Length: 299
Image 1 (cartoon, rainbow, N blue to C red):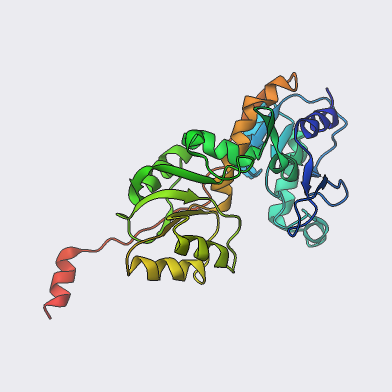
Image 2: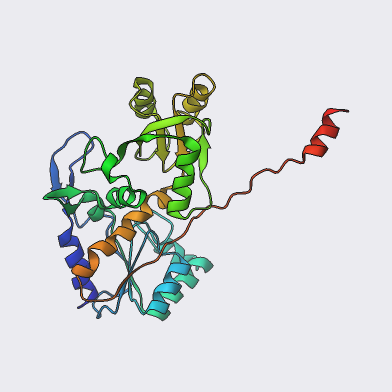
């Protein structure tokens, strides 16, 4: 089976319809000219020897794919550091990181295809369609019984009441993360959990939801220090009505690429593997010498 045929098969498995724009619910086929789901590197007209799914194809993922004998990496995010994966600017500057990564891909004969728009458009589930990324997230967390709202986008949950600290530990341990950032008090009681889309600036929608009591914990892919973060800090200093846990965009979505192994082997007759791209973040937390602090305070 050619790599190009594998890609066509995976595309066909997905719903392949997306909203025309943010202001309408009208669905249209994914436009092959503008979709992010391109072959990012390599020649797809060769026999597929194996597939690795991952969130993003970093150097370690490529090395592991090579060791596994796989020559197709299906990733969810960009390969070369920019929207659209334009490479000319890196080639022209002979950027050393780009050159080494491209050389490793060439040496291993690996093709990289991005599956972003298609997998978000939906995978078949119970006679309908569900976002393949966030279904994978809910499945890994054990939250499928707690889904609420739009079942095609599992991004809202009503959980048995827990604390922010317990929820954060569940995320860290289940997703094998180095840590998470927490806004609000660790002891806050939470049950109405939402996964928002990007919060890169305006957080008004989620501020209003929190104010109405529709959400008491926000699992953010990204967070900045203004808008929603400010609101949560103010809230926590009053009644602790809302908290947020920020784990990173790639960390949040990676289980959706792991979930591909539930259906991918049934679509193609080649070995299929999942390789976690890994937590991008490391955390250094402050250690306070209590004796030293006592001496300072007594001066």
